[in-house]
Length: 303
Length: 260
Image (cartoon, rainbow over all chains, first blue to last red; front, side, top):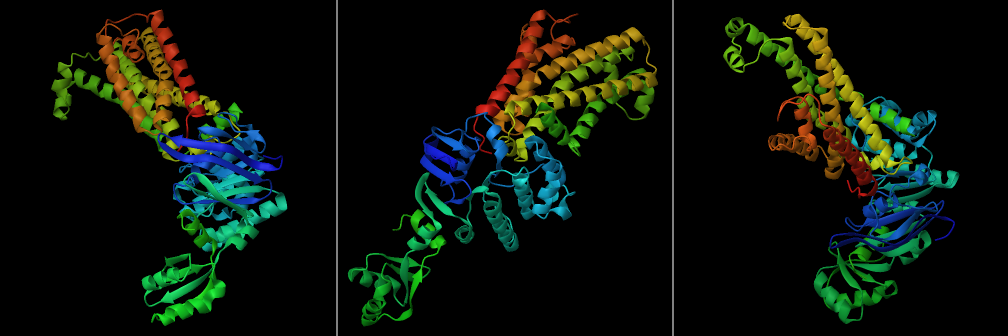
């Protein structure tokens, strides 16, 4: 846990009865970086985010945000934190502007901050509409405006692109990038849109069953995206057996194809084995895993 | 910081239907009693209009200012206990129903300020309702020209109604705690109904002065032996209930996990 840590957790756990939602999690998010927190549903992402924000108490370990220990009822550090947890919510009977005014008053931001946040999230045309009448995407924009209104040093965002259209997703990506590069804001975000994460994040943590199973920066991600050979065969099951018998250790089915890992220099050998056994090949091409495939392989236990 | 929180809590009531619904609900009290009084006073005309004249006559009510005033106190006291529970359930429970509780709990604001601000909002709301309904009752009573009017009677009636309304308010922090514990509208409403029923039961066992939810009915002479003034022990019980409710709600918000 260094002085340049925006978020640091040490051995943080959360137990609900017999279920261990988060297990001895150590995180160290550096100031000014975009850290993506990935995991399947129920992996412990939102529980972790809630512990970072003091919304739930850890069963063990401790959390520091911007150098301050997060404890129940200790609130002053949150003047520097903007956040969005799970679904975007707002007071339905109040307008967009009024909802943001509540945030402004509670964070002590100047009056102009409401209009700036509305402009930033392109909510001008909807500023005087009641929040209850907004679409999911507009509610998400309102929630992001609320998180950004008081110009926080640290943004903790749970699925920030949820409900946004493709243009909105790109817009949020550019906004988060500019916040980090131009204003030094730290972003800790969870996301299911892995392609976006791959574009955006400086570092990625992958959590599974409450454990941080992998943490890597962008360069490591590219390096670890495993090369493989994609094989389309008329008899995929028999092809897999033949390849395994020939010493190809990592063969797995995917979308009606086979993926043969760590063998990009053995394409001719694969062709010879399968064609020699009378199997017709429809595809045989070296390929690289994207983040989504890597994530799925990692969290499904396939090595 | 409290003033900012209080300002936001009042802002949250803007365009809220619940404020008007609560006024409509409590306003029905004086209007209903007035109708009853009119039926009692003029049963034949009421019967011609198809109103429940016979039933009203059987109730033993008299169409006088003292009867009108005491029935009104009952509505404000006992009806108010229930209505106040609705108000508290709304003020606290909407944060869970709308999913906005999580937006409040990681702000640079002590969570206890939200508890106090919401209780002040509920108190202001309740005072406005009671004043409006007493004014409505006075106008309707004067329009009916009921016999037995005197300034002393009116002042006594207002005193009794305000006392009952005040005691009813002091019980609601416990309802606020149940709301934060149950995170929604239904648990506090169920609790309020159960306490209202228990209040009647305890009153009949002679423990009315010790059980918080029996004290309002006791103060207005609805249960047990009518009392001129409540015993000091009852005020202590109500005060302790009030403080316990506030502390429990504040601790609940501070220490309980918020997973909604």
